[in-house]
Length: 296
Image (cartoon, rainbow, N blue to C red):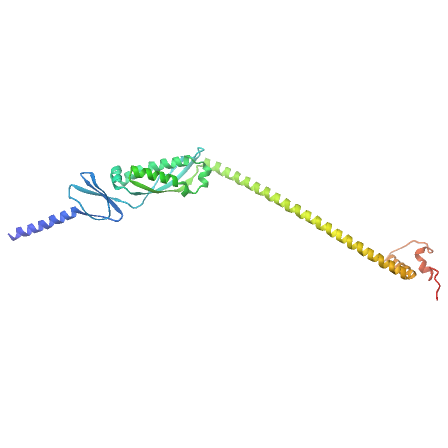
């Protein structure tokens, strides 16, 4: 009797434990859940916490709602001018509607990836197809992906119940034939810009040189004018001094000028003059009183 009672207690506890383990469930902070009854959703977007379900007839599907990363395959896209670019990108996505996500993918993350990737590829193909190669090279990669990310986010929320948080370009490469053409065009563009800068520099240099030459001519003309003015003033002053000296003592002035003439004529070595001894040049050497002035 005691053994039967103990067995009943143990069985009751086991049944209670089984019932509790199959009736209670926990949704983590990083998860959302849906409640199913025979595969049909009867409760949507169950929030984190402890919850109750009916064993056997009801099941729970939990989904990771953290931001996930999808590395897309490297793809080849054509630009507006039909030039090929090779693009390596990745996508940040997140489950935001657990019910729609479950209905579209049965909660299979790999199935979600297989559905998202073609959509991303199509969106990037359309985006690169409306831009030329110069725009793709010149624009920032983050700005380039804003439009596709927004458009794809709206579509994926409706179709899969997921949000496309971001699309990022890891790398954009050019095929070898396109790379050569692009580099040649870039080189030509840089050479054209260099020629323009050189022409502008040469023009500026010529302008500066012309201004400097004009200024130099002006300064030289001013200096020459000043020199001629000073020379004329000096000559006039010298003439005035000579005139005053001549008026004060004509004989002495004439004698002094003759002495200066003798000094300059016979200065240095090897100087020779061929003159008549009676010429006027030697009048002060021939006579102490050439002017006939009476001595006191």
